[in-house]
Length: 547
Image (cartoon, rainbow, N blue to C red):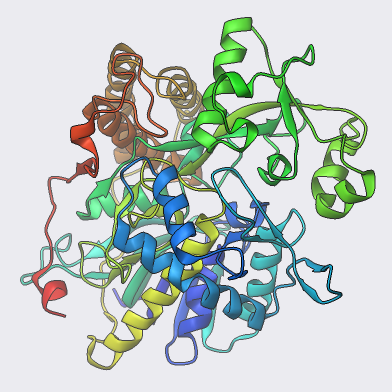
């Protein structure tokens, strides 16, 4: 079958990472962007905090930002990656400003107007540049507008990638290489064949594997699952970050309360007004996220609470409404006035620190396949992500990938013009879709109960047992019935769940975001030791090594 659409670069994902790469490449390459929902409707849009970068060199330094990142990462950050990202930070911010991102400004004491920098947990200085409390939205909408008007960028919105197409999967001789992807058109349920010289996964994280999450419905680990099935290694999937403060309300749907509130003085307390963070860490509310989330979880379980309180009402109302307008309006709509009263909050799954193994050029183990953003494991975050390093990572590694792809374009093979069609000759329409919805609910509930903020060996074993049963049910269902959006996502989520459990079971210590009652202390011998998993089909392409 003739490939239905071919390009130089096929980007799967329409968040900040994917859109940054598209814009950086489009002046020299034909680019295709696939977005599983409307463009930008991923986690990037909902990021509130900002981007951490050394912009005030009088008070801050690269060394300080590097030290804060390494400290939060609990001994597992790759120092070369941390130094690279931190030192690229100011240039990444300059690029975003050039694109038109309207970061929040302030008038300083000397009368000059500059960008307002806030401080978040784990940071020793104010270095987080932001657009009020909706930085992700400012980035995503600004980049979206430029992508839509670029003549070299073709968009496939509301399309969901099913699987990658590689030489190895097609049984072709020679070194493995990624050739494209099968993509489901969600409007008519047809499967498209998209070929490309280079394929980039920018598909985001996997927090929807948990019952409670701050992420949108798109965060189903698609890129991680596709890369694993194609033969890529993954690493450190046990380190799932739980954001300490999501609004507790039946109609809030896990609305995130940015860490910047605590950076500006918001205090955590029990519903009776009693503070508790100083009992858990001398840094109190400014401790890293893993410590704050675990403290809240501990207090809730110990006292049988449904939530704790977060209170910033001691700050002037004008300050609150100016710096946190989105949170103020959302809470007000739900009956809470944050200028006058505390709000109920709970932890929720927020960020996937592990992912697809890449190098500093964003290359994976398969030639011509790259991964950027939350789906990638670069070594930046270690055992716990430092607040506001993630959006920075998106921009920095999108530029790194663009530079590498641009250098390889003149000699790269042309996009495949003939790739096999998606085979539906032996499947029928599903007879009982309830199987998918039931398995989806069961998976997310036992992952929350057994593989959440606090784990035990027995809980992990129970989770693995249920995963084994679900995998077989889903495999049989996938083999006999036509694919749907929900089936594709469920197939990916159960695989991601298994990778999380396998990594968690392999780490016999507590470190960063991974806390287990059976091994409550960190093991000094495991400093710098990542949890690497290799699929049965793992190969490092010889062509990539020599490129």
